[in-house]
Image 1 (cartoon, helix red, strand yellow):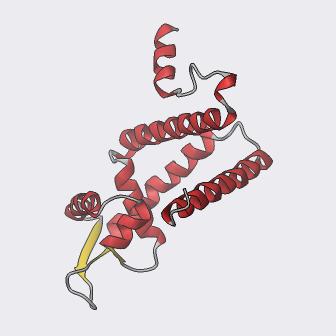
Image 2: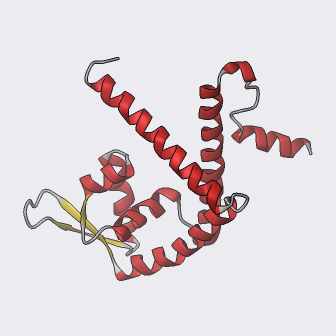
Length: 172
């Protein structure tokens, strides 16, 4: 029992938060806790079942969803990471035969990345499991609750983006 509490507390950013701390702080910590719980579970499952990592899965997912080859720059933008992070991941995936890189026809300095048939097959297999894991973790919510949560998070995202835009324009 004590070990379970230690493990749980590691991911529970809400422990110690009081009602007087304000709803905004409590929401932020709840989102952080949920994100970390989901992330940790998916990372663990990917390692156990496919001997892969979440960043590698994310690269394959972006390439699978994109129509045709994608530049390394576009891939790093979509994943919201630096070009340096993508370069190493793509190099390892290429070595394993999951992706291929070719110079852009328009600018030979730009590397275009696409899934190989082997990469597409590998991704399809783990994507099915990934979908099932996420569904299982959200199984306590009904469709109406999930739709409401999705809409509320969209509103929160817009609020965050509006503040960032205002700050970038020198307003805050």
